Image (cartoon, rainbow, N blue to C red; front, side, top):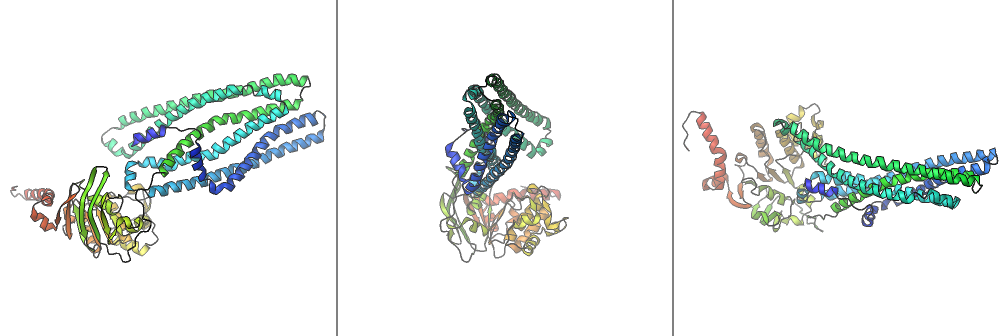
Length: 605
C-alpha cells in the first residue's frame, strides 16, 4: 500500500485542468459575493500599481519642469494617497481571498470526512490511514494555496504585467518596444526553469513520502528496534533517505539561485537600454524626462510579477494534482448504503438469525460459507474455533461492516440491509479485542460524547465494569486525560474501559470479540462477575479463545474454515469428542498434566 501511495504522489497533473477547476469552483459558489469583492479590489490594486509611476511622470513634466511648487505639492499628496489606498485595497483583497479560501476548504474537508465515515470496512482495508490523512489535510491545504496565492495571485500578476505593457505603449510605443525586447528570452528561461522545477518537485515528493513512512515506522516500532539492537542499522537507513532528500532540495535551490538572478539581470539590462535609448530621446526633446522616469518604475514593477509567475505555475500544478486525488476519493461510491425507506422496529427484542450467509473479502475466496443459525432474545451464544475460521467475520457481517454475497441476516425479523445502519448499530454493543481509546478524558471515552448518556449512567457503567475503583484513584478521576490510544493504561484497564463503554450505551445485543483474551486472571474474574449480572435479559454473541469464559453459554457454535462444524452445550460438545473437545484438551489437558507433575504424581497421557 505504501508503494502504491508513493507512486501516486509522484504523478503530477497539468498546471491547468478545466474539469478539475470547475469542481473546485463548486465549493466557492456559496461565497461568490466575497469572490466578487476580492476581484474588484484586485483590479483596484492593479490600478494603484499603474497610477504611481504616472503621477511621477506628471509631477516631473508639468510641475518640476515649470517650477510649480503648488502643483508639486498636490502630486506628492496624490502619490501618498495612492500608496495608502493601495495598502488598504491590498489588505481588503488579501483578507477576503484568504477568508473565502478557508471557508471553501473547511467545506471540502468536511465533505471528505463525511464521505470517509460512510465507507465500509473493505474500503479501509484497501486504503492506508496515512494516505487518507494526506488527502484530508495536506492535499486540501495545497488546494487552499490555489486560492490564497495561486489563482488570485496569478490574475493579479497577469493584470499588472499587461497593464504596465499597455501603459508603456500608451506613453511611448518605441520606448516600450525597447523595454519589452528581452521578453522572448525571459519566456524561454522561465519555460526551462518550470521544466526543471517540475522534475525536482516530483522527485522531492517521492523521497519525502519515503522519508515520512520511514520515520513513522521507526517511531512506532522503537521498542522492537531497541530490543533487538537495530538502532545503528535504522539510523543508516534513515540517513540514506535523508541525504537523498537533502540533495534533491539543494538541486532545487540551485535552479532558484540561477533563475531569479537571471531575471534580475534582464531587469537591469532593460533599465540600461532604457537609460541609453530614452536618454537620447530626452536630449533630443523627443520625449519628456518624466516619461523615462515612469518607464524605469514600470520596469521595476513589471519584473516582480514575472518572478512570481514561475512559483504560481508550481502552485497550480501541485493544486491540480491534489484536487485530482481529492475528487478521486470523493468519487468512490458508498458501497453499503442505507435503504431509501428503512424499516423500523417498534419494540426491539434482540433476535438474530443467519440464513445461508456467504461472505468474501476477495472475489472467489469466501470466509463464510452457508452460515445458518438463530439466536432467540436473551440467549447467549458463543463462537469458538481456530484463528481465521470466520468468527470475527460473522460479527462484521452482523454489524454490516461488510455486505454479504448471499443469504440474509435478520435482526428482529428484519434484514440488516433494510435497517438504517446507524439505527441498527445502536442496538449492538461491541467490545473488541483491540481496544481503541480516543484522546480526551476517561468520561469521554465511556460516553463518546453522546448526550443521551448522563453522569449517573456513566458512573453506573463504570461500577458494573469493575473499573470504577481504578478511575476514582486517579488524580482527576473521570476527567483524567487519556493519552493517544490509551498508552498510559494497561491492556486490562483498556479492556475494562471499553466494557464500561458498552454498558453505558446499554445495547439489547452485546457482542464480545475476544474481550478477555488479553487480560490477566484477576481482571478476567472481575469481568466474569460483571457479565453474570449484565447478560440477564440481553442477547449475547461471545467470541473467545479462552474456553473457560464461555462454558456457561446457552449454546456454543464451533466455526471452522468458514462453516459451522458443531453446535451444542459445553458438556454435549465435550462428550461428542469432536473439534471442540480437541480444542478444550489442547488448552486444559496440558494444564492438568503440569498440575499433576507439580504435585509429584505420575502422569500418563
